Image (cartoon, rainbow, N blue to C red; front, side, top):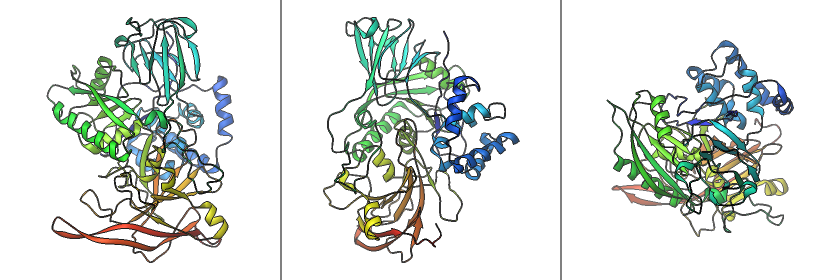
Length: 536
């Protein structure tokens, strides 16, 4: 059977300093020439000057033979890949890790990076998630299927009904997660393996929710959420654990891994306001016969191509340099809660949290206010919480109308903390849709008080730059922290054409660990458009 050229997106956990390209699966790039080149060329012609500059910078590394993992951090900073969603969605990073960012492959890779990314239903010939691809279906509707299907990859946001007959008729079963047909049956009880002849693809529909809202013309300060997959994302998801053993190596115990899954479920229960939960349906041990990181991963995936929303492969400590994620799988090189939440965040569509201090050095993965950075954290940051559908309409305020009509706007924010549901009338965040851009600024107060998680002080204000992510289908919701200041700061700060400063706060002192700690309940910001002569 013919293997289609399907991109595999893989992102690395940012908790250690090295990264591998692994987890099985091979990225096969589209070759130049043919109709794909015409499409890519038309997209390339529309690339912004800033994106073209970043691509030209990357090409200097390609031509020098240094578009590789050893030079990744340098390239990332020098070429400002963090400023462009198409360079941050995992495709460039995966190519670098796979050793395919070379002069010979650069034309095809460049075209691929500039081509719109879509997610389709992928059909495979064997009962594991890394086997040969035989067919890919992108559009909703009924599609014929050739005999021999044994595995179906279902992207987040889609539901697939598998039929034993042609034209989507006959015996059937509906699946929403990546599914091993060797262990799946039709409603009649007959096996689906190699017996599916057609499939129906449609969007996941969910019940009404205050977290899935629309912004009307009568609500000028409403902040639109462009995530089209909220109904599919916010439900109870199945989880399988595969504990991988390798001779001479130690893997965390199954009981310890199961406890971490329980802790992650508890985190999601609070942060999502009980919308997203985890259901651990199976725990399995696997002993790899090969000793290398990639070999052991590949063996484990082939042995356990499990049907679940998330399959968690816990590797022996020290066998692999990092944790990473792709499709419905995460590979963990430790059993830390932050690793579990970070890699699962990628599965949910989140990218990394960076820091871009004004005039300072870029700190990759440096945002401690999100689990998507490299430091200990308490939560995802506010742009990511909003993208996941974990904030209500009234909890955010779009400041563009006020600033455009009356000038300075004042907004009082309450701390995000763990994003527990609250009846407070105060906002969680203020948002500025950057004119002539597909990005936004989010103003938020991550924590009410200093704790032992990290050094973020109570009442500290963080300003993030994030994509609107209209049409995003992959690991795209990454953020850049562009300003950070305390609630008692007296100076003015600036980003993306705005100036802002804190003008008031409310706090109290509480006892914690025998010490008096200041706890902030609100911070009021004044936000206005920068003067034309001001430095951006």
